[in-house]
Length: 469
Image 1 (cartoon, one colour):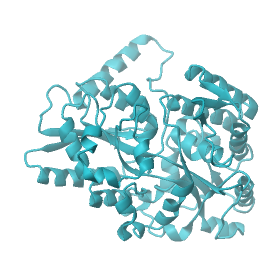
Image 2 (tube, one colour; image 1 turned 120 degrees about the vertical axis):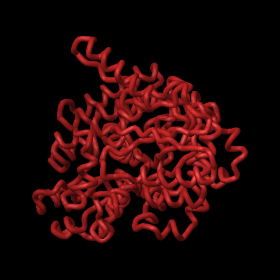
Image 3 (cartoon, helix red, strand yellow; image 1 turned 30 degrees about the vertical axis):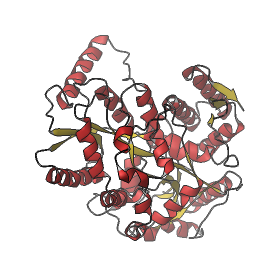
Image 4 (spheres, helix red, strand yellow; image 1 turned 135 degrees about the vertical axis):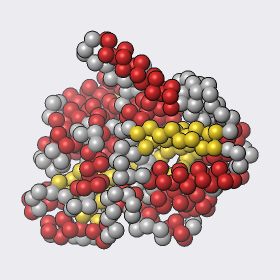
């Protein structure tokens, strides 16, 4: 939602095959832009600078609207203090790169930043974030946060580096209009992967002009491909008790697994059998904007493997208003591979508010966090963002539970959800997953060769910290 899941591409700027002069000029311009928008040496001790990911869809202003309200409240309750926003308007992968550039210097570091939990350990290891334990020890509300959410913001040193603002879960959205035309049950609840593919094949045969099944794939989709796509498959291959990506016993990344190949083969089938979108569309980095704002509302997708946060795209004022979406879309849990226990699978992530190590005004930044995360403000955010509550008092609040169709369904998935192994190497491992997915999506590599390439890449990026299973 949501976490939203998001891209784990290289943190370095892409290299160009052209001469170095344009690169040097681009780097200089980028540095100038970052210096202009960062905290800088001229920061006022009475101003907190807050940086966050601004949607690239101009019609989606959920975060902007919410933060504007918090700013008014904070400035009213803290006379003489000001809030200055430093939004980063960029696709997910570019957001991470730009944010890291800002965190490197006290001249550009904001006072508060929005961190995706899958990257937080990488930034912790790089020394970019400040531990929040002294603040949290003096904040009674911290006791209301659920343990799994707290763990997602904790470094390997045991210290906490972020305050989570919600979590998310994932499942299958299906269009009842399409299912009716295809003659499929409107209370569809697949038990196996084959059930999902069978429904997609029926839609392809009986409802032309509709994408039967959308599964995000490839490097342009970033973490949407890894988490919404591949990991929703991979974590449904076993019995739910062992992590199929990282072996916690040996503290090594898993390679050579049958589960990995089976998951890749599902992706290959979707695109090889023309059950998904055109490959060119699937590899468009902004395809999710088209899916959420156009294809789903227009009844052009039969089944979408996606997250709990989608309704935020359709709320009044979103630019893609769809007031009757809950009547036209059904929800089903993603099944395990063969229907084995626990029968369904979900992945969860989320975002946190973190204070940069080089922030000019860290105390004022945490005061802003306190305002962001009152019970009432947290509830407002979960509802506006179609997020899953990480505060126990909000999760039990009837105003939250009944606020929006689907909240109960996605909240119930928390019982069978999984979290990514949020270790520093994960972003590079995630990129390797995306490369393997893209190779089988385009047909450039077989499943076996794509899996071998993944194994080799993971061995390289983790310094050989791998185990074959």
